[in-house]
Image 1 (spheres, each protein chain N blue to C red):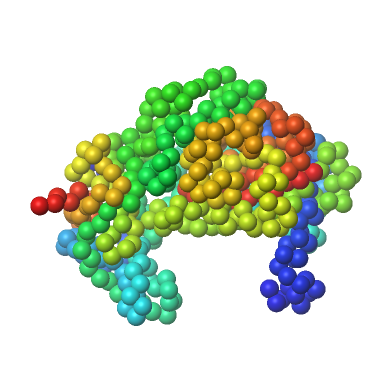
Image 2 (spheres, each protein chain N blue to C red):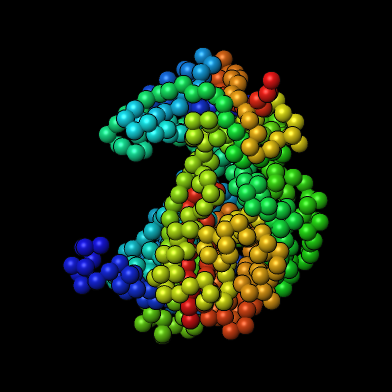
Length: 404
Length: 133
């Protein structure tokens, strides 16, 4: 980091701390839509952007930064170029960002937006996403939505792995190595369903389930049952970020981005870590170091839960429990609202909503918890939230630490 | 089995696909360091300046992990089994497990390669349980 030292920073940590807390989230809105027949995702995005700006007391004319995940495959029409969305909104942002590393893209956007704001490249940044997989008529272009049967993918796609089977192979190995049980995996879904019961917007909030219900649901890709899988809903959301200074004048209580970390690890299943380590093992320490905090400081967590195995590996990699202990950690009730680490307080992707890339909703729920506005269960007086997202099948990850 | 995904091969991968058609499983190795690598690339992961060599491997390995796929976005008739095979030489390779009842599969099980026809020009390496005689 010699180049930074030359600019007056004595270490990377000092440089990172210079970004820590410099930007704030002043608008965070999640659409209550779960089933939006024939509503194009762009329309949902604009609804959410309008609502998030209104929370902040800002107008579209003040937005000079726009973040849109722009991948090359469509899941529920949820992919669009940043130029197309800017055009649809009717703005010409001077700073924009279109990283698409799957479901955690929006956490990456928030991190990059914080850097841009700290550097003076943008003043008001909008991060937005919506998709409508429940009615969207176009199929994704290949069997596996992340990989083409060319280049590296030519050695895997012929064997027809499904997206869920990639997660399932992590789960199967975790059970073999650590004695994790199907009941412990099921407890993840049961816990988040309990949180969803209090959230009027949650897709499955009205239907309570038991561990037995999960185990009796049909097998999708062993060892994962149907109720080990997230819901498929339509939906969208938006975040508005600005500088700490400007946030003081906004209508909403600011929530500061105190730390973040991001990493990519692999795409092909064959490149899986033999120790089942996911990129969270890199993103967590980076985020904690920047924020100057440790796992013990966290009041509430939002962990991406596309499948029940997903938050289990995050708990281990982020340092909330020892390696191999996540199944027992969940079974002991730590993730419940009354536990030591309340998690997915809105019901998460397993029970509230999941149009395809849920990281934005996890970030929104992290913000709502720190504002005391959780629509599901609310952690009393929460002051520090950790939000962790992953992309693909543990291919990429990003962690954000929020404070008030 | 119904339809397998078509593949787009290239000049780097052509020798591999040709060898599979002949019933030989090749894996790349750095000829200097001896480091194995899977999947095939045009470079060595441990030294960008060295071209990897193709080496025929034993085709023996163990199941590292697996999933029995019952439903999903697939053209194949379910259920079928995708598995990560830990080759005797070290690399992990994604393939299918065939010729075994799904309730008999276990991580650590010894397997051996077999070659199946995907279409009139292309074959695939799959794995079967190894019989101990």
